[in-house]
Amino acid sequence: MLVRIAARIRYPAPPALPAPRWQTGSAHLVHGVLYLLMLAIPVTGVLFYQAGGREVSFFGMVLPTLIAPNPDLKQNIREFHELMGNAVYVVVGIHILGVLYHQFIQKDGTLLRMLPWKK
Image (cartoon, rainbow, N blue to C red; front, side, top):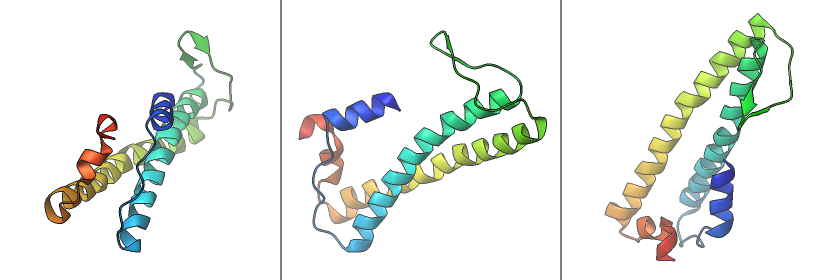
């Protein structure tokens, strides 16, 4: 996620092309959900491990314990973590369909505008 945030800072999104409000709103919603999932999935993964009584390390550093071991909570976190993982497939698929729609139906150059070196 940190790499993605750094890339967004280095290569900001180009201004939106004129489009109906539903398309602009949908694009913002999909991007927002993708960012939310990219943040939430690792957090729930850490919580899952900690609820199972395991410590989590990141590049050799042990992360602080956020929750106490709890087998019941562990199962709920696991299910939510998996749900979000599956949601990524759906949201990425919607994103790809939107790109293909713009590239091959609207032919507005959106695909090329997504490439950082084409700005």
